[in-house]
Length: 394
Ligand code: APR
Ligand code: PHB
Image (tube, rainbow, N blue to C red; front, side, top):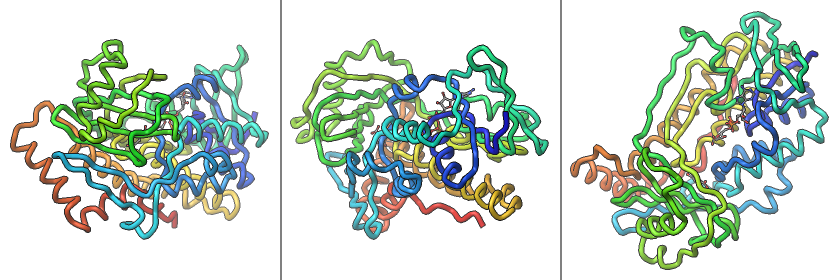
């Protein structure tokens, strides 16, 4: 079997890349380890930057997002008994974010993939990459008990942090940068009305809390927990009580609680691999980098990698610009490191660190006070939150 681009992984990165390439007339095959149902059962973040919204519109996967998504022109920071709104629209010249769950984005992209007629293999346990440094790389895998050999021009590693593609690069050809945070987020999804019209990021002496939403009737809340916490020890009652405790009193009084539909604990990590390419393999999204969720940058960074790779491949196939391939990593990493910095900063100022002494806590509060107290500071937060511009590939 032959294709132009083999895409490993059918998360948002792989599916969005597949659609952009398809629109550009570039055939591609997606190979995914899990089943579609499994992928659609994963609950992830739900804040889309304008760049991601534009890409979904470009591939025509915007009908439901434009109907059901909620545009947010601001969010709140709660700390030291204060509630401070960051007015995204006013501070960025009219920019905003779209509230629309990653699970919904993935579902819409999967439907579009089906309509596109491009081939996808799900339930593949053993995708293996070969000859990455040659001009004829291949992927071998088992599907329904049959051995398949896929020949291609390029391979896109869209298989997330735990995937096989990054691991196919020799250790001495890449370098990784990592920060593991000493806490996690316990998240609850519930069919309750949001406590506030906009997201609230709350710093409290017992730890961070976040009020988010998926729709006018579905909410997503988080509380910071220590790494040894077990989800089984958190009844719904205990979760709601802890959340209320960490929110400003007026907000806590308005909180509508209800049975959880999903409850899970996620660790927080910053991770970047350099370079993001090896021969004809290009790493995309979580396969190449992870951000802690404070700031909602994970999905949006994946989207900017996808945009960069698809723009480069478009020029390779339609203008013969193979010289641009060597620039992929450098173009992506400039934007990635800025989002890494912002996610790290949001995490650093809003969480309770176990080793933090009283001096560090005063500095943390002062950092927030200083940033929200100055227009320059609020603008910095706002322009990062709505998403920095995509880099040019030339
Ligand atoms: N072979 C094939 N597919 C694989 C393999 C493998 N060896 N390993 C992992 N996969 C699949 C996973 O099952 C998953 O469906 O690759 C996909 C990767 O999807 P994600 O982890 O969602 O990563 P990505 O598409 O880059 O999405 C960006 O942004 O906010 C973050 O974590 C969030 O998923 C989100 C990400
Ligand atoms: C979410 O809705 O799940 C969410 C929103 C904002 C974040 C992280 C997660 O920063």
